[in-house]
Structures are given as structure tokens and as C-alpha cells.
Length: 281
Image (cartoon, rainbow, N blue to C red; front, side, top):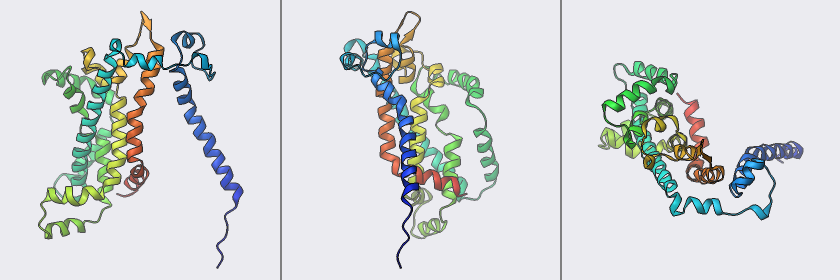
């Protein structure tokens, strides 16, 4: 039996359409990268544009970021890396355990807890900032990294996502693990965590991105300049007394790299994790 060949024209049109959409999506990054190589005077005169002007391009802005006079940039970068890494690991660990427990175990109040998780998802973060700030004062966590990380280390969205994903896994694995003598924690870490790898990959990207770009809460909690995160530090470069747009744009380009690496590392899990986690339940 000869297989039917798909029409070539729709495939070509689809490829062209995706290429155009990709070019439109990447165009702002091209302008940003080009502007990061130009001096401040050109940016103030013409703003972001697509003119190449090779005679004006140089890596002077990037060199300034790593010079001794701008050593704060490295501190901001290091702070954001530390906070994002600790937050992402703790959030994935704790939220996956809560979601797994809600999906796999039957206990009194389980549905009530799940409904509460859904309700918390609907509450905007801005509403709870004031009570959270008072709690941080009471716990003496103002101007500390712990004060930035702890309030959001267990989030409703990852709990919901892991619960949905775990609900689609066969419960026979739990019985098999118990017959083999595994403890409940052993079943989770040795059997369930590998099975939930796509969910971990998808949530790792989303939570790392949320933490890396977080602005309002770190701005409220952090008071010392050397403890600022990268978004706050870059925003502080624009002041009423002088605008360092050239340094700001170069720093913003470098700020993309960690999230890009996280996405490249977990991309094979991203689509499958979101698809399965969103369908099963």
C-alpha cells in the first residue's frame, strides 16, 4: 500500500508563517542587542533603531559592567542567581510533595485543602503584600534573602500543577513500592519523582523565570544596595540626576542568559510537562 503524500503548499505556507512570527518575536531582542553596543549619546538622540552603523558599535558598555567601578553589577547578578536557585529548588521540592500528597493519599479535609489552593491562586499578590511585609518585620527578615524567598516558597500554581500531574499516574506504583519495603518518602523520591520529571522540568522553567524577573517584592524587602537583585539594580541606574541607558541595556542583555540556559536545559520536558499536567486530573 502506497502512503498518501501530504500536499507541499500548506506545509510551505505553515513554515513561512512560523518564520515570520519568529522574526517578529525576535525583533525586539535584535534592537536591544544592537542598542547595547552603541554609546549613550546615540541612544538619547535616536532611541532604539535598526540602523547598524558599524563605526559606532563596540563592547565598551559590556566592559564597563565588569570593571572595578561597576562591581555592583556582579553583586546584583550573584544575588539574583542565589535567590532564584534556592527559591526554584525549594519551591519544586515542597510544592511537588504537597501536590503529590493531595493526588495520591485520601485523608480528611483533602478536598477542602485543594479548594483553598485554588482560591489562593485567584488572589492577586498585590493584595497580600502589606500583611506579608508586617510578618517579615515581626520575623526580622527585612533586608535579608530569606525575606525575599520564604513568603513564596510554596506557591499555589505549582501545587495545582503537580497535583494534576500526579493524579494521572497509576497508583499501582505505590503498592509495588510498599511491597518492596520502601517507605512513603522512598516511594516519592525513588519512584514518583522520576515519573514526574516532565512536570519538574516545566515548573523549573516557570518558577525560575518568575523569581529571576521578580521586582516588587524584592524592592520592598531589600534595603541595602549590595543586596539588591538584578532587576532592582538595573532600575536604579535610571535616576533624575543621570540616565545610564547604555549600561542599563547592556546589563539587560546579559540578564537574559541564565533564563535562556534554564530553558535550553529543560526544554525537552517543557511542552510534554505542560500538556500532560494540564489534561490529566
